[in-house]
Amino acid sequence: MQNFIFISPNFPTNYWQFCHELKNNGMNVLGIGDQPYDELKPELKDSLNEYYKVGSLENYDEVYRAVAFFIFKYGRIDWLESNTNTGWSGTLPCAPTSTSPPASRPRICPASSTRAR
Image (tube, rainbow, N blue to C red):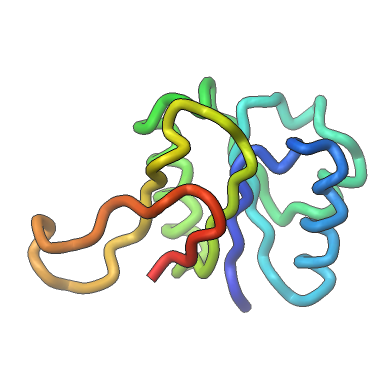
C-alpha cells in the first residue's frame, strides 16, 4: 500500500474529496495540519487514515517530526502534497533514501506535488 501525506488536508475545503478518492484507491492518506482534529469536516476525517496535529505549519521542526512519525509507523512515504501558502512552502522533510552517511542523504523536498524518493 502506498502512503500519501497531505499537508493541511482541510484547505481548500473541498479537498476532502481528493483524500476520499485516494483512500478508495488503496492509499494510506495521512494528514498533517494545525487545525484540531475535532474541527475537521466529518467527510475529511473519514477520508484520512491518520491525522497529526502540529502547533504551526510554519514550524519546520514540528512538520519534520510529523513526517518522521508517519515514516516510522507506515514506512516509506510515496507522495507529499500541500496547497497551503505557509512560510516553509519551499521545503518539506523527507525520509532518508539510503543507508549512506547522514550528510549525503537528501533531507528536504519541494513542497507542492513532489514525490519523495
